[in-house]
Amino acid sequence: MGFDIPPSALDSISSDSRKCIERLKAHQLEKVDISGRPSSRLAAVLVLLYEESGKLRVLLTTRSKSLRSHPGQTALPGGKVDDVDVDVIQAAYREANEEVGLPLDSPHIHTVCLLRPYTSSSRLLVTPVVALLTDTSILRNLTRCEDEVDRIFDHPLEAMLDPSLASEEPLVKKGSEDWLYKSDYHNFTDILVPWIGNSGYRMHRFRSSASPIKGLTAEILIMTAAIAYDRLPVYEHYAPNQLTKFKDILRYLDAEHAPNQSGTSTPIGISAHDQVLTQ
Image 1 (cartoon, rainbow, N blue to C red):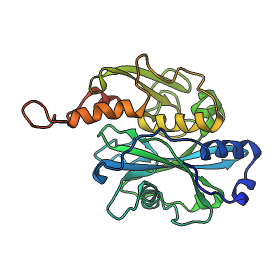
Image 2: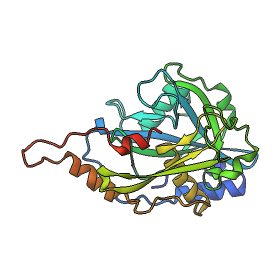
Image 3: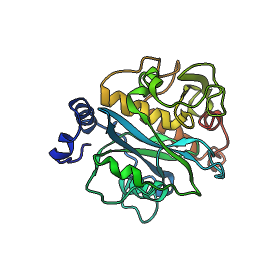
Image 4: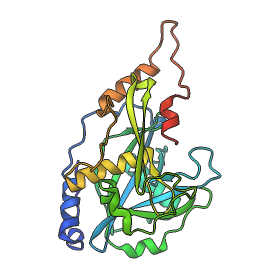
C-alpha cells in the first residue's frame, strides 16, 4: 500500500535513495486481515528514513533502563495503539512525537508504506510504518522523553543487509556492555520456538553507535532494507525451519488463544520466543 509523496520530496534526495523509496512505496503487503483484532493487541512503530551524504539512514532509540519491559534495548519509536488513534499510522506518529519530539503533521515527513505486522514478545501485532524525512534540520530539534528514552541515534539502512558497511560509523567499543561479542559487526543465535510449532528463530544482533540493534527491531529493519535495495542480506537471514509468512505465525497465535478441551483459553506464559526477543 503506497502513499502519495510530492515529487518535490523525491527530488530532494539522490537518485539511489529515490529508487529505494519508490521500491518501498510500491511494496505489496502480505494479505492478512487483522481488522477484527482488539486495539489493545495492536501496536505500531515508525521507521523514519532520511538521507545523509547520499545514503539512507534510520532513526533509532535506546530505551530507558528504568523501564520494566526491554530496558536499555534498541527500539524504533512506537507503542500500543490508543483509543485516540484512528489507525496504526496515527499511533506510530503519536508515539514518535511523545518519545523523541518528532513534530506531528510536518510537511517534511511523508508516509511511504506499511509493512506486514510482526509479533512482539508480548504477542502484540506490531505494524511498521515507513516514512521519509526530507528536512534533516528537524533532527537537531528532537528531544527525548527522559522517562522512556536514554538515547536517540541512527544507523545506515543498507548496513542491515551488509553489516560491514557500518565500519565507518562511530561504533561502540568491542567488549563494552553494548557489544560483548567477538564478531566485528553482526552475530546471531538460533533457537526453536515452542509456541510456533517449534519453528526455528534467528536472533540477529548488529553493532551500532549505541545499543545493539536486535530482535524485532532488527527484523523490521532487515525487511525494510531488503525491499528498499531489492536484494537479500549477505548473511543467511532465517534459521532452518523458520516460519517467514505472517499468516502462518498468526495461525499459531490464534491457536494459543483458542479454548482448550476444558473450555478455557490457553494461558500465555513466558516462552523461548519471549526470551530470545529480549536477549
